[in-house]
Image 1: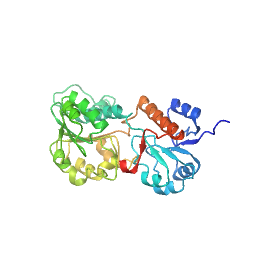
Image 2 (image 1 turned 90 degrees about the horizontal axis):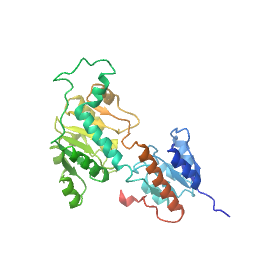
Image 3 (image 1 turned 60 degrees about the vertical axis):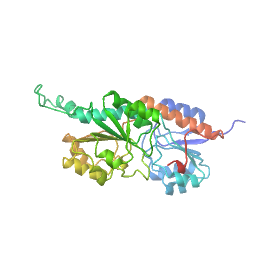
Length: 331
């Protein structure tokens, strides 16, 4: 007699090829209309599923985990991070957690480099001029941006994405600097000609461009606090494609309003999907470039994420350790 397939509940619509494979392997309950689940719907899913596949926008806190059914054994996050899940609470209930690391590295690094260029060269502002019929012709002093070649780039978080960004930035002639919990391998540091800063404060005070590429954890919440943001020089550009909570967004907004920074490029926000009206007004004035959390949004990347979820679920259900398991000690 064939073994009963585990009930796998997926909270958002995934690429068709991923959903098809899930239906082949599991008793998969899909979210075809892609409407975000309410808190009560998430609670019902946790009470019914053997495996929950949430996304980064689903907040699975200790209270929700407390109502999970005894049959729930795995939360297989469709996302690079796990800051949307109370890992400690899940682990205490005997529920394993996995994520999908590594597959979004190149896509996110591409978007980070694109944001650096967009802010420095005012690309979004320029792209609006012709459709608005505001262009009267070339002028030597109009729409001037900043050259990035030869400038200092400070990378906050030199993991996979930080290193991928450094490779791209080096090709553009940027000088690579970074702050991390520890030095990267000497061979990587040498290849990137990267300078390590033990003190984040000292690095911030000397950079022309700063990119946030570290994960969001309790230790990195408001890592770029109001105090630290003040170290940035008036001509500096700040880019964030990691998590909005890493920057004190209110303090950053005040600095942009006061002209204390040359500009910023944000793909993530502290309270997303809500975006501060002040930031929206600054974007309309050309002082900040805002994107709707699309740093990893490629067809290839989303399929790769789905494939990782499937591998993690299949291996776990077959009694093996999933390759991307997350433990509280890792955070």
